[in-house]
Image (tube, rainbow, N blue to C red; front, side):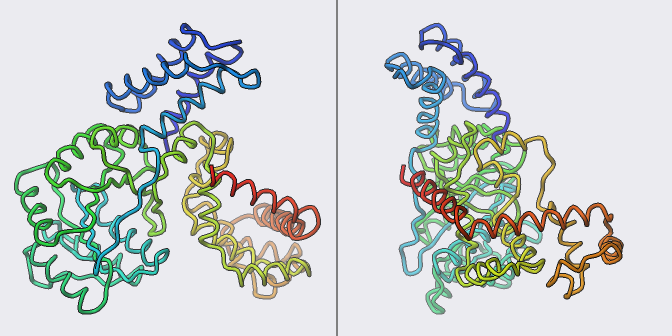
Amino acid sequence: MFENLSDKLEQSFRLLKGQGRITEINVAETLKDVRRALLDADVNFKIAKQFTDQVKEEALGQKILTAVKPGEMMVKIVHDHLAELMGGESVEINIKGQPAVILIAGLQGSGKTTFSGKLAYLLKAKKGRQPLLVAGDVYRPAAIDQLKVLGEQISVPVYSGEGNMNPVKIAVSAIREARHKGYNPVIIDTAGRLAIDEQMMKEISSIKEAVSPHEILFVVDSMTGQDAVNTAKEFNNRLDFDGVVLTKLDGDTRGGAALSIRSVVDKPIKFVSTGEKMEALDVFYPKRMADRILGMGDIVSLVEKAQEQYDQEEARKLQKKLAKNQFDFNDFLSQIQQIKKMGNIKDLASMIPGVGKAMKDLDMDDDAFRGIEAIIHSMTPEERNNPSILNGTRRKRIADGSGTSVTEVNRLVRQFDETRRMMRMMTTGKGKNLARMMNQQAMKNGMR
């Protein structure tokens, strides 16, 4: 996410490294490269120029403290203006209503249907709601079936108005169904087109008029860059939507949509979506995104993701096993499953300051743990419960059964032993103090 932009901004700041003070000359040279980096990221030219002009004005007016280097001060100024450019603060979705009605709009292929499922999952899992998904796309082949499959995955009902081909009537009937059965909110997935056309705009305007939604979200494929921003402007003129959703941020995106869209349509980015998993949807925090763009990581979001998968009862059981040195491969496998639920591994790594840059060229995907899981699944219950019995003969059988090599099995056993040792250390003595300090630091970051 934003790797190219991050690299180019870092190169821009190198001009100020070693400089004793900020001057009009070195600021101008730095910001020329910053503006070029923004343009390469497909940010609107006027927005890029306005951004660098504002940074220049603030930078030249700064009195540099003796403890702060000019390069560090420039990074701080750019960070603050980046966050402001993307909205400054996060804005919550409006789900007040009986039921609350959320209308999803966007072009075909932007990821509206998948987002609708992700939003339903998020509201159900984190807000305790009982959402109803509405299949309002009656034109795209298999659109209704796709939404039903997603609904089944997350155990959320889908209303399709069997046989009804009028999206307006489907939406109205769905709200009536929600009131009758107590579903709330109602999430209406609408049809998209390959390009903006009058028929599509009239149809979604009619749906808006008929259901009076509490929230209208415009879904944008972030990979389309500045074109997405222009499309958002057209939609906003007709719908006056409440917020933007950026999808496919895990793809080869240059970031122009994320950086430009708030300035162009004056509407907040409310969610960002990465990957196909239903859990892969995050509230958009401008300051945290600015941290990640400038390579500072995002520890607060990483901690929040970990807490979402945190089960206190399971943690207590695990702590007892660690104290008795009884941590086994079943526990190891369980920890892997929890990490996988947190999201894309490479994306998670980018939240750790300094790690994202170091790992940017590594090929890491959601199948990164596949080999490890295969090895553990090839063990007998006795071997999982008692790793100390894994002799050479057993390791050869496990390697053959998992389609791996004895070397890979040996490596996993070493990793397991190291993990068990470190986890046990974290539950006793200095490790406890270290864990407490890390948690306190994360809380401080969150309160900034």
